[in-house]
Each structure stands twice: as structure tokens, then as C-alpha cells.
Image (cartoon, rainbow, N blue to C red; front, top):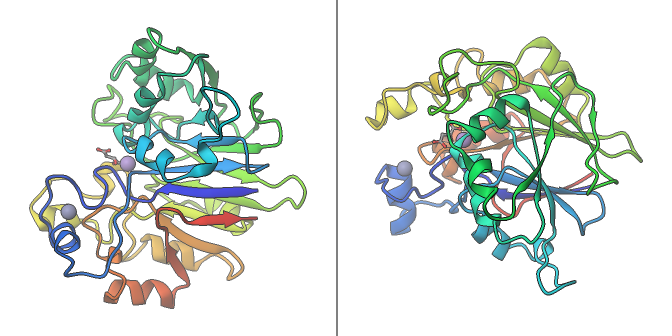
Length: 305
Ligand code: MLT
Ligand code: MN
Ligand code: ZN
């Protein structure tokens, strides 16, 4: 089973186009040790040829250009992307769908009923795409049952309903529904090993911890280091939790949660906001993460299991 991290940054990417925070300005000027990152997406494949794109980020074209596996040349028009699965309806996870419109057949698209409603109404991408390639929608269950993707017969995936937030444009922003945000479990049928992916995660309860404890690797929400990171920078009134993201540091934070997992589980933070000090490879926060056995995802990172 292969997983490729296409984009490891949160919405906005790193550096963000209009941002002069110490991280973004430092990366542009070469004053800090850090790597640029594109917006949130991974690709998953059982055979290394046919891929499930998990989230379609605004940076999808750059990500495809950097990933030869996604651009085979078996036909005049061809792609390694066999289907797309969405974790939520956030702008950083769905906007890239518009960039896939040149397909000659409808795009196989897997999303919960809640996400489908947001991308049909609040941000009507599926309606727009119906004038181009169209979509073949498959509704994702949120009861934990297995998802069979006709285009990817070798792949075994399961969804997990999560506590987070629908996008700011959603009529349900203030009253989240189960199905607004999901996590994904990818299972290797030969070994039974699983990888859990959750770029938007506001709460880690006992059930979720149990599930993560049985995984080979967990790729989880690494958006902010502190709850008030964006407020402290003066760029937003919102806390990390207001946006549906559990910060890493502090009581009850992601580091504390990941500490509860067995040492056998590989722990990786993903969906990292450009304000997050963990982007600095030689910074003190990075040392704290290493002490806790936690890695930071980067674009191009591969996980085989
Ligand atoms: C989020 O996860 O909160 C989003 O990245 C926000 C956005 O894309 O604007
Ligand atoms: Mn996001
Ligand atoms: Zn920034």
C-alpha cells in the first residue's frame, strides 16, 4: 500500500501569498531553515498505478506536475487519479476539483452527504462541473462500514466521523453535523495494517484513540502549535479550536493525545499552517516533537505499509 503526501500545509500553503509572518517572510528571504509546502492532500494506491486522490487542493496542478505517478501516458488523455475522496468541504480540500474538469468522463467523487450538500449549494462545484466533465458521486458512509471504490478494486478504505467544523461558507458552520468532517483509514488487506489520516481534527476521544492505537501510522491535524497562534500574530480573531483544529501544545493538546499511543505507531503531523513554529526545522518546537517521537509531514513524503 502506498501513500504519497502531495500537500502538507493547511489552507493558504507555506509561504502564503500575502503573508509576512516570521515564517512566511523568513522562508522567502532564506533566513529560516524550512521547506515550502503546498495545500492539504494525499494520494493512496494499492498497485502504485491507480491512485485515490484524497482532497483536491487549490495546488493540485503543481502537485500533479511534481508526481510522475499521477501522470502516466497510457492514452492521449490520461491520469493516475482514478477517483477523488473528500475529507470535508473546506476550500483547501475541494477547489482543485475545478482543475480536473478537462476529463472526458465524469469524475468519480466520494463524499459524505453533508459534504455533497455544501459543494452543491454553498460552493456549487458539482453544479459547475456538470457543464464540463461532470461527476459520478458516491456517498461515503459514516458508520464505519467499508468503502468499495469501483475504479480502485484493490483499495480498502473506511471513514471515521470526526469532531471538527464545516467551512465558513457552510450554513452549518455554527452547528456542525456528523459527516461534515471525516478521517480516513486505509487498510492493507494482506497484512491488516492501517494508516489513519485526519487533517482536520478538533477532538480526540477514547474511541478514536483506540482506533489510532491499532494503526501503523497516523497522519493527524498539525495546523497550529498554540490555540491562539493566529490571534497572537494579529491575523485572525479565531482560535485554532474555533476553526476545528486541536493545537499541538498545552493541556489536552495533540502532543498529549499522541503520547497515549503505543511507541509502535508512527506519529506524523500534517495540514500545517504557515504560522506554526514547527515549520522551522531547527526550532525548539521541533525538538519537543522529536522528544515525543512525532514527525512533521512534508510534500513528497511517502509511507509504504
Ligand atoms: C481549515 O482547515 O480550517 C482551512 O484550511 C481553512 C481554509 O482553507 O481557508
Ligand atoms: Mn484546511
Ligand atoms: Zn505566514
